[in-house]
Image (tube, rainbow, N blue to C red; front, side, top):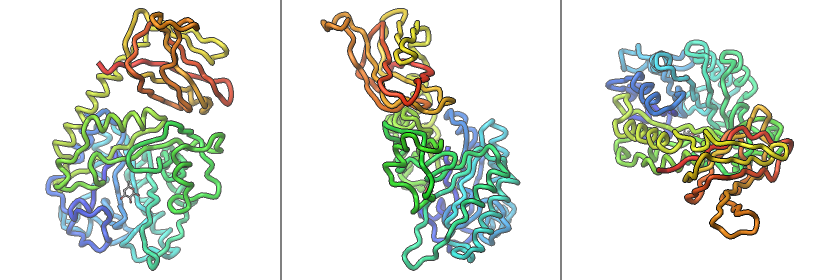
Length: 408
Ligand code: FUL
């Protein structure tokens, strides 16, 4: 779960200007345990909160600036969202991560080398006081206009600082090093999606590889930088009252799921708390309905008790079900401990009612990459026998599992 929360929650802006009074941030009923409980009930595994967005306001009492919760009148300046949220995550068994915007529209040092020290110190504060984190989100956005302040970021120091204090943190940015941006903010990965990427010569933000490269990765890319697809459950990243009736439907969320998790990506779904500091009922109910919808389809693997025969060095998997079964999705997984090798595949079913001269085998799905998980929607199929044929692979293909799921 992505959580966008800060002055924008109160102003209705997506990008705060940095000039907002600290008192603007004033949640009337903050409840981070409710966020963690919602994430848990939604089947999510971690929360990443905007500890500082582009407006520069810090949700923890940072010593790096005078634009924080400590200067606000919220809880008489004694409030600390990160303390409360990290504690709630621990209580609910949810991993905790942070987004700290490098772009800062408030800090006086922004646009000078000194700002790199400021940002590094912010990383130190957050990762040492509330970490270790499971993920650190480096946003690539920098919207200063032609006359705006330009900051040359010291990415090497930023990354080394996170690595030192949160050794296991996955670092997100356009180019990783842990995971990469999907190239859009709709939560949609490409069907062809290599987890490998060439990052030499690129930087996050304006110096990032072109969008289609971010989407597809690089075949034989030098680094393992899988995709993380981010999207908001609402039109905006931040809560606003006018969008309470625009929360995405279960069908929308399911479609996003299939084109992110189903395409070798992880999903980061933003659920923004309101001015109370709570996730609205409409969002949390939708999340539970979404979890139930996923469980209804993906909770039962119809191939779990199948007999599997692997032939041709793992290039062909023949699957025999105990009886005729109907399904709408084929799920394939590669054993990514060996990297990502498969570049094309085909799924066939045997249908004796079809008069074909090849034993009744019909192709029901074809695709390119698989990766850690690929879910292929098919037309409604009913069969007892199917086979997965790996038609292209860099090395010996190491398929890990084949699963079948039904909508009903
Ligand atoms: C972007 C930001 O500019 C948006 O405000 C939001 O935080 C999104 C997740 O990343 O780069």
